[in-house]
Length: 321
Image (cartoon, rainbow, N blue to C red; front, side, top):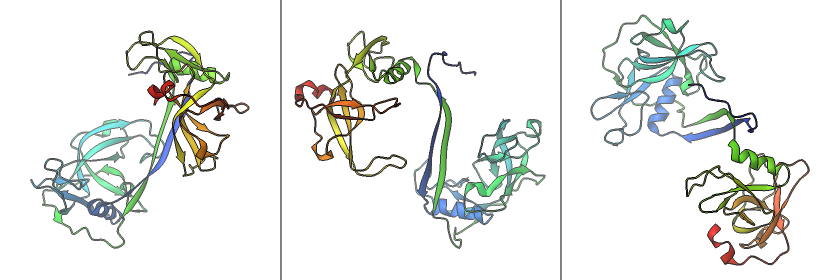
């Protein structure tokens, strides 16, 4: 299905979400990944005798703990496939290939990986394939470089028991996660962002409950109706709740400790997030009246500082906590 492009007056920009995912491995996953490094494929046997590859630590039917490891063959059968005509960066192959589910000989479940084939016409359900091992192996699923076509007949031998013991076992992995996409904030937030560029804060009022949402969402989540009536709020507001940040974030040039708060701008029916500056962190309090501080060329307030007004009474903001 082709996705329609947003109207030309709406903002849109490329967005990348990227982070390293670090996890420790239990005995089953440790044995599986270490085995791949040694060109050995391990599965785990469930109570009904099914061999699961990749192995899991708990039976998906009974939830009992699984520890009986077995070795399966590096050959198998394609159960289903999808052709990938335009490989993305960091995928197993940089030329067109097939994503395949392969049931390795001796296994009762299928393993997802890439199949190196000259074209989609060369791939079929039921075709025989074998593992192509990576030249350098570190104890990761990428130790299987891909699958390749094979003429090997289907094996019927029982998988061999394995104690899962290897020298220098892999005990943890770091998997980079990355998502690239084009983001459009939509009609309501486009207007909100454009107003911030003019040092104004604009929300939208619900025609039913009359709550003013900042940032606007395009619809009232309570009443379920569209919000089109734009309302300028602030610029001053009231601290409703806050937290003291003591851990410095990567790539954020702000010295700790600092305060991050919910701020209900005057006229808004919803508190937004903002950093509090211009005051010692231990003097920030609920009810503190603040105003935005803009930097030259900034598209949003850099932080909020005290206005010098008396604190707001609790009853004026208690519904916005």
